[in-house]
Length: 186
Image (cartoon, rainbow, N blue to C red):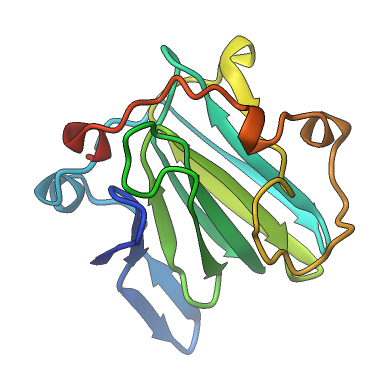
């Protein structure tokens, strides 16, 4: 596995080894010793997936403390315009975003520490995204910021989006409970 730190401290693009042959491919998405050697979370409490059709935008989501979480996210079918936003007060990249393309074909993943909002736009007719998270889902702590409240060049200015996601506060009005600490990036 190759780990490349993104411009947002503590966020990584992970490129696993992909074994391909005439039958298809095989991808290892997690290896405890390798994650641990990079100082990353190795304990995950839940794993789930979403299925989205082309033009769907989900996000920008996170869980609030004390139920905040670290995520590993990747596409197992299709491709996504994937966005991360730093919400950690004191971070050198507070309020900044980073974009990456996640696709089943590349088998790449993103590692997202606590305090980073996450969202994506489905580029293909069907997109299946997997999420491995360090804390169990808590409806009471589930939150987000408005998808179009930053200067993110989304592929579509009028995506298919849930009413819930349309109702989030813009980043400028969000009072962040997240604090940047070097240790929190791992």
